[in-house]
Amino acid sequence: MEKPEKVYLGEDGFWSTWLSKLLFTLISVKVWGLVAGTWISTHLLLNQEVIALGGQTYELSFSAAQWLTFNTTIWALIFGMKEVFRISEKKDKNEKAALDKRLETKEKVTAMLNKPNDPSTVRVNADGTETVGSEPD
Image (cartoon, rainbow, N blue to C red; front, top):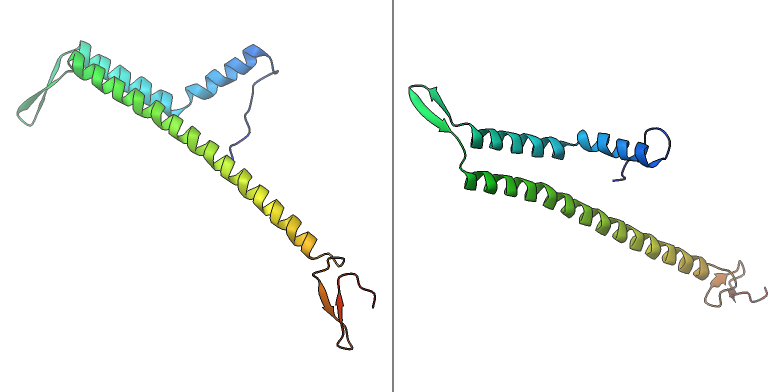
């Protein structure tokens, strides 16, 4: 799977490149996941809320340890998976390059073997005689 070409806004200056990187980062699902997870957990840490459902009351809150564990886990998972995908992509590119090189080598070998001047090439003439390599007819 090929990556789409990167798109930059405006000229190729530093600030336009920085702005385009910022905009494309802001539309990323990872960013929204981190922002939402951090915001909700911080809200639950700071505001002790009690809700009633079906005659039962539930306390919605986080302790400091739960907040730290939750946020550390979420951030580590997202950035860890980002690195896993980056390593996997690099491995795929290296494997493709190796396969392309191997294919190119096979094509060269095939071309060398199919040359009429190759002494290992044997042709059978119409009269039944064999011609080896570039031997005159």
